[in-house]
Length: 237
Image (cartoon, rainbow, N blue to C red; front, side, top):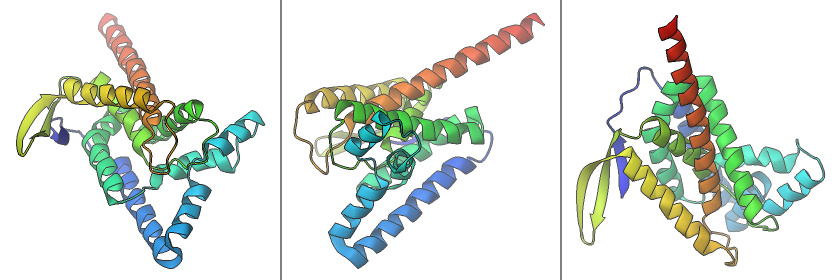
């Protein structure tokens, strides 16, 4: 099931979402330049320097180094991607679901939400495998936070999805509750299945997805509660 677009209009241009997409594309162009000049070894060094290395982050946090290279790398890692498919998939999800969350929160609040979602995702993955030397890269964790928020705030929104049925496919409008709920359940199953498996350089950080999704859903629940409280206050007044 691949979401293609949602039927959930926005009130304003999603400048932050567009900026995040543009920054990710520019970062990928930088990666391609590094790959052309220095090959696979150079690209791997780039990922080690600007991606999240769980062992380094664990050591920094254990030593009380809240602001350090390993912690700053949580933010830079959000703009790095392993290949075109990784980049395109993340940016598709960010465009479909990010514009509505930005519309609901406002531009600056959405930027903070996105970055903090990435932090929560990275910490969740590091907590599962704190000694790993494999760098974590990609916007998936921050985007997972966006998906969690979307599920809470717009569960009935219709998502046009490509459903693959063997050699056949069908375009179907499906409620966000089912699309994103199914996605999250898959992450849970795959995450549990990955426990105890040897870490590979190209492994998917399922617990980053899980941690980001849960963090985003919790923020959205708070936003919804605050909105409901404000509405009741206005009605009473």
